[in-house]
Length: 394
Ligand SMILES: CC1=C(CCC(=O)O)c2cc3nc(cc4[nH]c(cc5[nH]c(cc1n2)c(C)c5CCC(=O)O)c(CCC(=O)O)c4C)C(CCC(=O)O)=C3C
Ligand SMILES: [Fe+2]
Image (cartoon, rainbow, N blue to C red; front, side, top):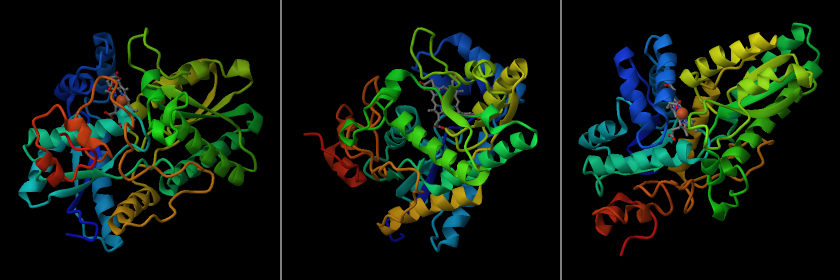
């Protein structure tokens, strides 16, 4: 056991299909109980099939797992990194069961998602709770989680480099800085999910919630870095992609393709697209941006360049290792860079953080996680032994 009491890091990914036959079962896993129309699933299945039925996300997470383990070793932390997914094999529950069999019972989760919201944070914590329940390991295994890390230099710096380079390419292609628009793009989520992202007790519940506030802070940090390197910052805005709910349900807007279509009318002719909402170049990036958004740009006669996500950039991986070290050593190094002015998120999600609007499910790694277990037949003693913090059921 290491200093912080953890036996392994659990890299928690989204998961993706590994072959054509996996595509529909994967999509059903992702959308089970989420009210996504069947037509949308069929449409999205075509994106995956066009890429050979294989999402690049699993290879990206295999590479990140290895890189993170190496970065931890480099810091003198001999901590294995195990990898499990929310929606496809290897499932989190299976790798947690394997870890427990190997005697690894205190796991520190690292999600491949940088921001607060139900989809990008609590749902990972629910899957940790679900894994303990389905494996019968409540009381035997603890799964904590590092905080959202949108504000860390390791996440911001690779975007800043890529964005500055892309702006320079547009300048080299004879666009004036006033003709360039930076489109920071992230996953659209339902308005109701955005508004309830983060926690009221942390002051997050302004319109758009912590999800939008955090993205705006990250975008501003990248824009400031670009100004430093290119002499000035082009106009920029935060836009959304990959909307999937029924049209009757409000989701975050504007959509990136609509914005690209209207660029000429607003006086812009070059788009620098920055996938600030994502950590790797998975299908939402290589399909929704490199095909759909690029096609929209071509149709609109707009110059287009898409910036890379952090992936396994050395600085990003080192930043994740620093977050793990921070937790193990119980100290808080200054991982934020100047322009991101928001306070750091707590180590354990605050009470009521990123609430599940469909009803509570058991979670770990939240200050009130124990409350989420009230409807299960798990005993208070088991919860205490799991180290799940919060108010225990009576
Ligand atoms: C916030 C957020 C992130 C970023 C945080 C994070 O990374 O976790 C993210 C990432 C991803 N989303 C992904 C794929 C999909 N997301 C879907 C559906 C949905 N995403 C949502 C939100 C998010 N999604 C939501 C609110 C839905 C509606 C259903 C629901 O309420 O839960 C669907 C269903 C079909 C569709 O409707 O598009 C698919 C296939 C992949 C894998 C790509 C690959 O395979 O390479 C990744 C990394
Ligand atoms: Fe998604």
